[in-house]
Amino acid sequence: MKTKPIEEIQALCDKYAAPIGLTVDSVEFKQGKNPALTVFIDKDGGVTLDDCEKLHNAIFDPLDELDPTYGLPYTLNVSSLGADRPFKKERDFLSHIGKKVEVRLYASVKGKKFYEGELLSYDGEHIVIKVDDNNTLSFDLKSVVKVSEYIDF
Image (cartoon, rainbow, N blue to C red; front, side, top):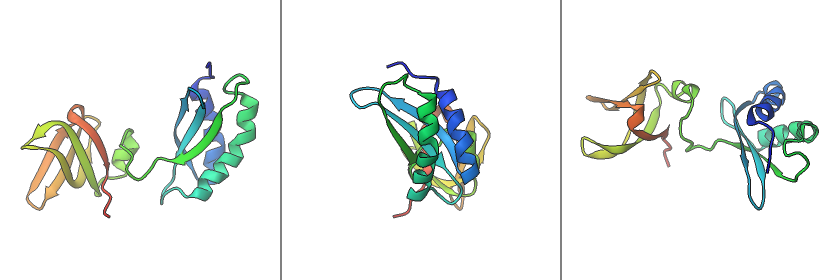
């Protein structure tokens, strides 16, 4: 299925998200038997179901006018990124400086492929985490599978 460029769709969504205090993190289009356009949103303090509904209602008609699938049917979804989402963008890392994170590695470092600790720094190529009172570790982002917020159950 041919679709309009994701950047064009995201720009339209951004226009409606900002006035209601939301940030569009990304837009994905999944093709197949049940095509779906999913708009992933974020906001300080976390996204609620009401936030998803507000943006869905705000963009439904404008997206219909944009016609991102050139007349073919699709399902529109608006979703939070999820609590365990991987950090992908600089703002994900910077907003978690001083907070506890989980780091999964491709290869073992000091016998482990998984670490938890306080994110101390991020420079675009490396992260440094404090794993305990006496130890910090630095990881090259090329060696990292996933960095995400630590969730305490």
